[in-house]
Image (cartoon, rainbow, N blue to C red):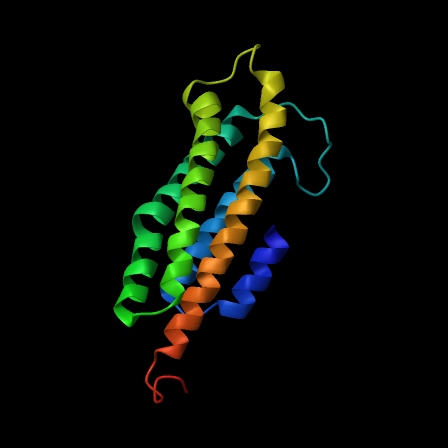
Length: 164
């Protein structure tokens, strides 16, 4: 996921400050996720759970989801509405999928970060961490479509002198 993010950032980076901040926030989220699940160079596969890493990931997760839903998505849709772009329809199609994804991810947060971990939940946690990784990958795929279409819309609606 980080490689795909870096590729996207190289392709669209610098074209819009909001998008740049969004991608940087995503990178931070991914780094904390990888740290939690132990995807780091020279790290053993079966290390014990680091509860501090879980809490850190949980906070970044909520921050990311909140900023996407209450700041970024709204700004992209509002900016696209202002341009009367046909891409707005795609954004409106993607939003319910992102909402559903958010609910599933927040269930993980509620079950493990809010309630904490005990002997009964520790075994399920490792499986659910994998599921969260899959949910994040699906989410980023949807968001990448939104990003690309927003950038395409903004570029196509600039005045000719702005496109230089």
